Length: 366
Ligand SMILES: *Cc1c(COP(=O)(O)O)cnc(C)c1O
Picture 1 (spheres, rainbow, N blue to C red):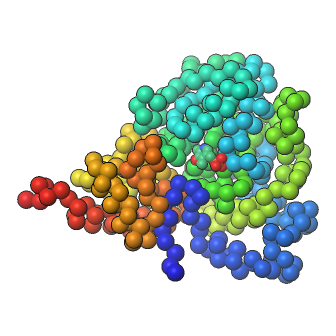
Picture 2: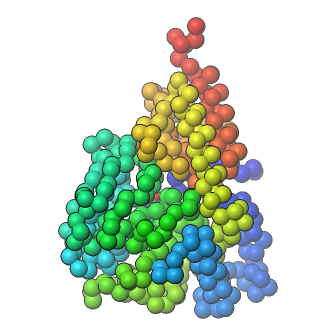
Picture 3: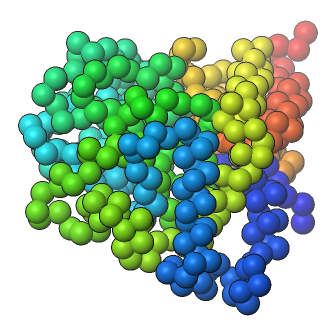
C-alpha cells in the first residue's frame, strides 16, 4: 500500500523520514534492547531525548532564556483551563478575542475562573476574518489577553500579532506553531497540542515566561500548576515519552530542512499555489477574507452540496484524503501543515482543475 496525501486538520501527516527513523529505532533503541516506549522516564536514555527535544525547539523558535518549555499532557483543551487557573492572579480579569470554535471553547472555560471580556469578535460574520485588535481595546488591569493565532476550523490567521503592551499575550498556536518564524518575546505564554505540527496526539507544548509561573491559587491541582512541570523539567510524573521522542525527530527534521525560515518559505509557497487556484476557479472559492487567510488550513466551497460531496469522494479515490470541510463551514478543507509536501498540494490542484472540467454545469459549456 502506497502512502496517501492526508489533508486532515489533525491528527495530521508526519514527515515520512521521521516515521522511517522511528520505525528503524522502534524495537531496539540505541542498543538498549528496548523501544523508547519501554524506557524508564528517569533513565539517561530518555532524559537525553527530552533535553534534546527542548534544545532543538528552543533553537528553532529562538526562545529567550527567560522562558520555560514544558512537555505535558491534556491537549490544547486542557490549556483552556490551565491558563486562567494559573494566570488570573491579580485582577482576576482577562481579555479574549473570539475568532472561532476553539476561541469560544477557551472563553467558555475561562469564565469558570474569572471575569472574561470579549474585546473583539468576528462571529456575526461567521468568523471569516480576524478582527482588528489594538492596545486601546485592552484593559490595562487584565491579567492577560488570549488569542488563537490560527483558526483551524475557519481557516483564518493573524497576519500581525497584536501589541498588548504590558499585559501578557497568551496564544493558542496549536495549528500553526513552527510553521514560520515568530518573535516569542511578544508572548507571555504559547501553547499547542502536538497533533498538527509537532508530533503524535498526547503531547502538549507550553512555552511560558518565567515570571508567569508560580501564581496559581493554593487550590490549583498539582498537575494543573505550571510550577509543578517547570520545577521538575516536565518529569513530575510520567510524561508522554513516545510523543516527546517523536517531537524530537520532527524538530530534527525541521532543523535539517533549514529551520523555520525555510519552512515558512515552503508553507507560503504551498498556500499561495492553492489560493491562486481558488482565485482562478469558476467552481470553488475561499470563504475567508483575503487578509485573514491561513497558510495551514484552507477551506473552499462550491455552490452545490452534491458537487462538494462528489469532490471529496473522487479525491479520496485518487489518494487525496480527509478533504471534507468541518460541519460548521461545509464544503472542503485542505490542511497543509508542515509535513504536507509541495507535491501533495500540486496533486490536489491538478485534481481540482480536472474535477472542475469534468463537472462543469452543462449550461456553461458552450
Ligand atoms: C486542535 C486544536 C485544539 C484542540 O486540541 P486538543 O489537543 O485536541 O485539545 C485547540 N485549539 C486549536 C487552535 C486547535 O487547532
